[in-house]
Image (cartoon, helix red, strand yellow):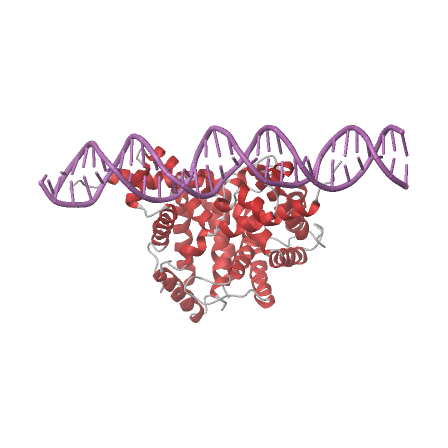
Length: 197
Length: 197
DNA sequence: TAAATATAAATGAATGTTCGTTTATTTATG
DNA sequence: CATAAATAAACGAACATTCATTTATATTTA
């Protein structure tokens, strides 16, 4: 039998990501995608059940990539300061090196699609995070608070900074903004100050 | 001459917001919108040049509403702690009372549309914010830092909390999450701790 | 005051286009 | 040669938008 052409599969993936990031979900049409990827429209349906399945699979693949990148060299048994630092640098690195993934995931995250992927998220990632927070509180390295408050204070500022950086400009009306290593560490210190007892 | 029916205009606005929030930008079709609002498709084109103009006008109207709500009882000359508190409560109140506006704006904010509205944002809002931050630093009530870092630490956690609240659940795998007054104030205190010298 | 007129609002139906998806057929490889 | 990959062409449906027409009302005229 004939073998699958992995290059085609990858071309479809990449072009789909690019289209969504550049033109939004409106911009993703199966026929345009086929043209961009250099395949027949019908070929896409060999790999994906339908348009929604394509988007959902992209979500899960990119989400998994990001989750794995985040946990690199991370251990829930680490000290709070050490562990949070590792996660910050991991997330920042991933975002900088994979702007397409980052933009795609952020767009999904704030769209109605998010609900559909939500339940299928990797639970081991959340479990590791939960254990880390629990350990930190037990060791008195972190003020006791709900996990959602923790997440909001610990990571929302990071993603906000990354967004400022990747759109290339800062607050409207102001000049450009570049997230350099110094600014990253400065902000991490602020967050640590907030969260440490 | 015949007078404009303001109820029709308002129905179009409201149904458009609802459609986008519920089904994303894909879900907004002019014919569906006309049917939902109880008008002819051609009527929409009396009020809006085309589909993109409709979305852009919605952006600016809702954005303005939110900006105005944020500045209620706010004065850039306020003390840092007082001013930040006022803004937190204003923003939280607006989000809770206008979930449709909030979801719509968040969706825009993370979509390619954002670039198109960006330049047209109200600058007086940003000016007031800039003055507030500047005053706070001068008075030694706030550590000196770039406005983008300030914004990220000061407000990103709030929007993250609101999002947890409004989707009705907390972190994936965990139970539900409700943003009550106590949690809101607790998180505000953490943020203040981070930002005060 | 009452009828006529002017004008913008509003519409239903139609435009050509593009959409997601399928089918019948050809192509490449185990 | 068997079989799955890949395709070109086509499907009806839905798309954004327009056009010829009707409707309602503010203003003018008698």
